[in-house]
Length: 232
Image (cartoon, rainbow, N blue to C red; front, side):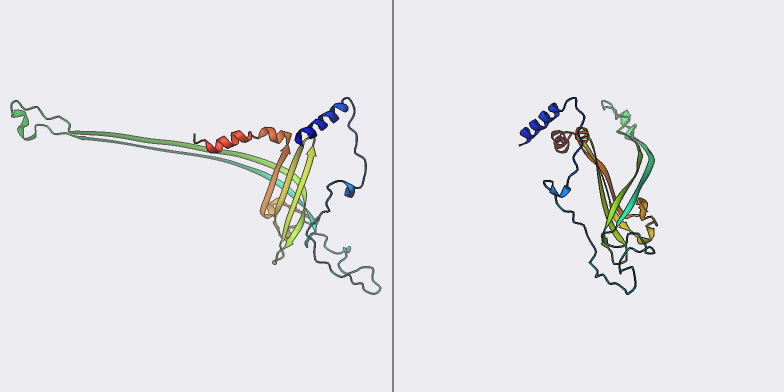
């Protein structure tokens, strides 16, 4: 099925040579093939109660109510600010030299005995030399600045919030993905319902992509398999 689909795509591209890309028509997204309703964690429904002679009901977002995220299903903006740098250099040297000489000369007047081969001047000679020189360095710089909306997925017993957000941006045939997850304190959420990524505990931040460019940058599957299997 892949070959016919590829052929149809190529034919469609050939038929639009020299023409401007056409905008998609405005339609009902729920009628598109493969549409599935979004399901997210939601708080337990609370019955609405109205007070006599009052314009507000219980649980409504009033003017004087804190608008920051506080319960399951609420949204907040995570300001991802990553600016890490590290420069580490290590060097170690070690050297050792040993030399042993053992000699026996004229042992018991051996030089006075005729027809007796002389004893060697050195019975044992041993030399050893060892040296080690190791150097290592690490230079790392990372930078990422962006915003992503996250949803509260869990309310912990101590009042902390578990949040998770994901963002996908498609440019031509490349999709950039950004995901953020972790635990935040309600006190760290700003008045504009934003929180800095440095204040997220157990933070999990992922930024990458998939598409034609990312595929070209990856080694082929055969090369990856050989890198794992070959012992040299």
